[in-house]
Length: 223
Image (tube, rainbow, N blue to C red):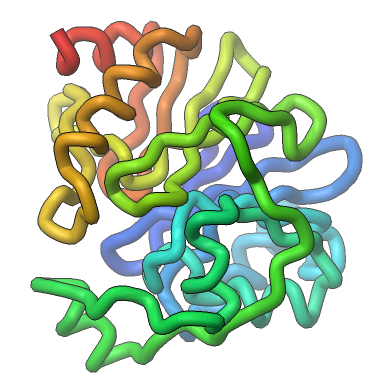
C-alpha cells in the first residue's frame, strides 16, 4: 500500500487497485478489489490505525468482479453505505447476472471466484452529483453503462478514474481495459470528458498513479 496524497492510499490486490480515503468522518473505500481479499483490506486499515468499523462508505466505480469483490463483506461487517450507479446496480445486487468475464478476467474468476451480491444504499443517477462531501461522482459510461469516476476536492483534486482510463509505466494516460468494455467508443468519449475537469492527481483501477497536472495527460491522450 502506498500513500498517493495526504490521506489517500492505493492498495494493490492482484492485478487491480482499490483506494482508501481517510476523512474526518471515517474511511471511504473506492472499490474493494478482487474477491477473497477481506483480510488484506483489514491489514491495510490496521496499518492506518483504523479497523473495519471505521469504514463509513464505499464508492463503486462499476460492476466488474475485480472492483466489487469484497463489497458485500465490507458492508456486512462495517455497516458502511454503498454507492453505485443505477445502470450497474442490477449486476451488483444480483438482480441480473453480470456479463461473462473475458480474457484474463475469465481465468481470474475460475481461480478466485465471483463477487457476492450485495444491497446498495444509494444509487447514483445523472451526469454529475455529490454522493459524499468533497466527492463529485461523474458518470463515465463505456466500460460499463453505469461506470462512475470520482473527483475528490483535496490537494488540487484527485481523480479516481476506475477503468475509464489507465496509465503506462512512464506516466502517460491511456485507455482503460477496453477488451472487456461494453462500448469502447463511448469509453473514449468519457475519457475525453474527464479532461474538462481540474485535478492534479489521478489514480486508476489498473496502472500507476499520476501526479502533477494529471489532467493534462488526459487532454493529451484525447487530443
